[in-house]
Amino acid sequence: MRIAKVILAIVVSFVGSACGRAVAETDEQTPIVQQIDQLLLRKMAAQSVTPAERSSDEEFIRRLSLDLAGRIPTVAQTREFLSDDAADKRSRLIDHLLDSPSTVNHLAESWRNAMLPSNASPKLFRNSAGLHNWLREQIGNNLRYDRIVSDLIAATGSEQDGPALFFTALDLEPKKVAAATSRIFLGLQIECAECHDHPFDDWKQEDFWGYAAFFARLPKNDNMVRGRNFRLTDRMEGDVTLPETETVVLP
Image (cartoon, rainbow, N blue to C red; front, top):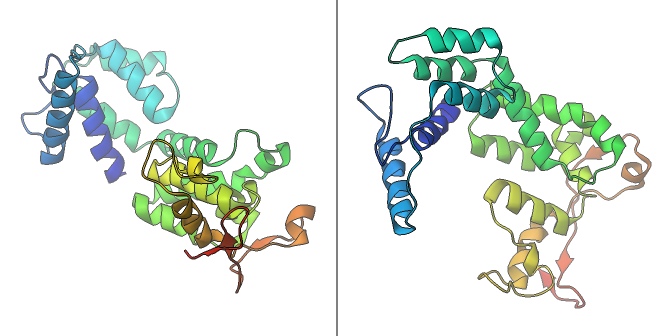
């Protein structure tokens, strides 16, 4: 969970800031936290935003538990934390939650929900245990983010294996997979360029379909429709064309 600890350190130093002063529990902060603190503070200053006051212990344990474990802390956990006078108690609470199965499960559930369409069929969600378990294993093994994404994008196998469900949920359509992967994994909304050049960004229609072309060789067979013995593989052929044209767009 090393990556999560770095991200959380950044978030905690920001959420717990008070008038521009980072509130790390020790005298030392990692350089990356210091750099991001400064970027955030400069951005807030430019927009005349006043940093929030340092959170109370009650607020801290509740927010941290919800963010990492997906639940509020128990009464016993709250009483133990509030009665602790040690200077490093917040850092220890972070480490404790990050090392708990609850955090791994919560992260896996959050990613599964982000990856599956909200309008997915009941059958799809019944099969989602495979994807959830796959994500939980990757996160629990502390795989890097880029490795998790690359393993998922290049995956083969059945829906029960996990990653294949992501593609079948999108009907194995290149344009749907392109829109979803760019939004979920790259933070880019490029689907506006599906039918025309993006009205507010630099993305062109050919950019969208050039990206979709990477997924043009996903399998198309009746087994997927019938919901039996489907396996995700790579076909030897498959292209995409610009809508309403015969222009083939290369990956």
